[in-house]
Length: 206
Image 1 (cartoon, rainbow, N blue to C red):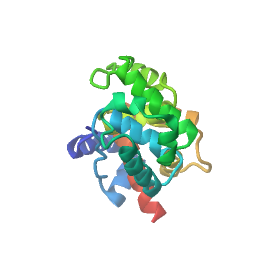
Image 2 (image 1 turned 180 degrees about the horizontal axis):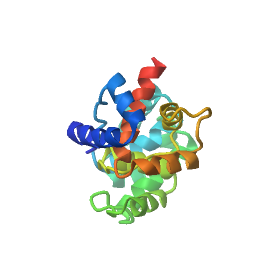
Image 3 (image 1 turned 45 degrees about the vertical axis):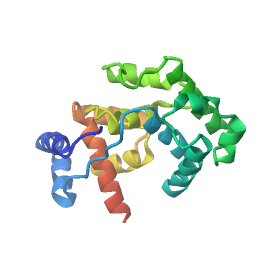
């Protein structure tokens, strides 16, 4: 599971003690709610389905995908055996259908064991990213939400870039590399920072 409410509070309090900008933002918007996901291939598969579509569309596609795969997305052998055209009929693009197949095959073939990912964050990202369709962003999102890795920062996320720029008073949205470099000063609490930035971004967006 992801970072608990207590872990978020402890991490953000530590950051607030070191960074006045975070302390001020905490005072203004309060602590974020935890973002918790189950550990396993199902959560990673949901991330693939959700790529570049709205939350509502992703939920609809997922429901149809479950039905197409016999109602159990945890039966990865069955998912791997489901024809690409059947997956496409559930609403996936041909590319995403191939990604779902690749993930199911990686797990059933023993390439990926979600119960025993490397403890080192970079090594875990590299392993997950070796599967077709899983990029660095998806891997980092998984490690943050499903495993509660405390120092993961998905710098490729547009909302994080925007809100980090706002938090630090930058004139322009930082790039992915710039965001990663800027967030380095927030170690070892970059996971809490990520969830806090999403929390603040949503408040500003409203």
